[in-house]
Length: 309
Image 1 (tube, rainbow, N blue to C red):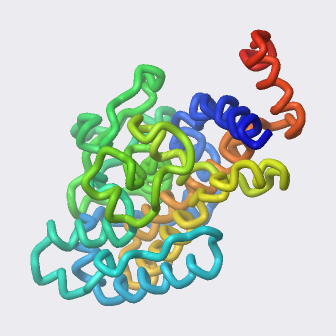
Image 2 (image 1 turned 120 degrees about the vertical axis):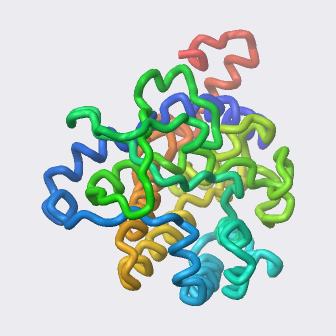
């Protein structure tokens, strides 16, 4: 019976990425343009990530340690940050590339994450007079045919003035650009085995976008039957990402780096919005555990109609 339940879960959740939000930025332009706190906020100056890290290396080191302590207390099945990955502020003396990599690995995101200076323009606004950017300069994942023309990027340069609404909306789509790519020990990456997350709890460990799923989905309200059969469903970490980026946003605002305050806020917003997507928060919305098992049992007996539907 347990094997049957697990098979049902995996079969019915395997296609859930197909229902993912395809571009968070487009919705957030509309959502926040009517909020004066965002729409009327003063313009900020674009700042490279390395400049922010160098200026605030010691507070960031303390914050990342506090984040790890918070997660150990509040997130079920959270694996503590391995000691070699702890952020040491003195790495700033080794130059911007070493500093950047130390920060990304302490967050346990992909070291290939771009964090480029860019924006995704509002398609309802006049086209900006700015240099366009190739997809690969912004995203570590290849462009997907289903995205169509939905992702257009333009370059920012250090010191450029940019509206907070644009920073926030653009960043809200950024976690889908490979930040959570190949973070598990059975993924095809150099960093995954060092991050301490263990083997991927569900999904194909060799399929790039699939390896991100446990950081963008949170199955927090399934039945006890489901959890008994599939305890691995508790190993999801969107709440970790929300806390990490929200607290980094607060630090950036507090220390005079408003560009990164808005950008980190956008990153946190992404995961919050993912949890409002029904197929990111439930294995099969509207289906009871018994019904899920029954549908898969019929499919195994040669009657896959309900499963395919």
